[in-house]
Amino acid sequence: MSENTQEDEEDFPELDFHIPPKSSRAVIIRYKEQDEKREEALQHYHFILEILRLQSDYSVYGEPIYWRTDGEHVPVTFWVLCNDVFWWAAADAEQVTLEDVPELRQAIEDVRTLLEPEKSPHYCIESYETGCELWCARKRKMRPQQPAYPKDDRLRALFDACGPVRKPEEEG
Image 1 (tube, one colour):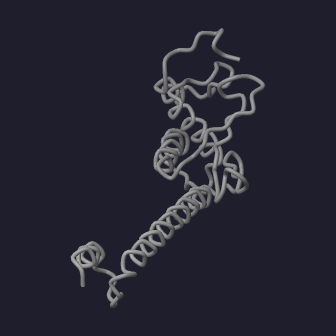
Image 2 (tube, helix red, strand yellow):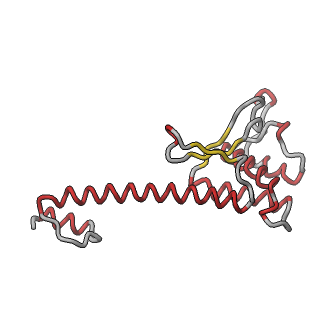
Image 3 (cartoon, helix red, strand yellow):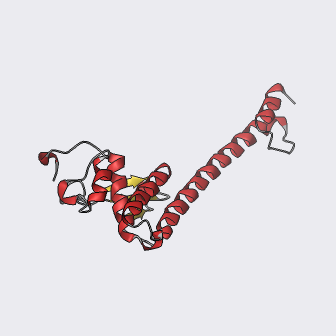
């Protein structure tokens, strides 16, 4: 075997079969590409399961989380709907990534802990929806417009912490 082939085999010890020297680099590159595609597919699968678990935990199967699977959104893109939360008459949503799921879950739990600490998450649809709005506000580092602020005083501090006070002209 040539020196280059031995180096390649040392980089990929999981390849446990003999490869003729001339084709070793091509096979290793193909395996590396397959591993990268497999890893990407596993990340998408994990992401989808995390969103479905979140919805299942709160017995909510739809709003305010939406998804698309076509065109630029392949294999799947999720959003949290936040229409009229930040501006009036605005169709608005915040995209969710796999990295966002723990923060989204935490925002929902923060609301549930304040509003319904004794209840199981399965019966806290209001906490789920308000928690999704809180997550959008946290992600954007922006308070909702005043008409969209929660009426419950216990929640106001959570939304106040999301960003600076907005001027009326900045709101819808």
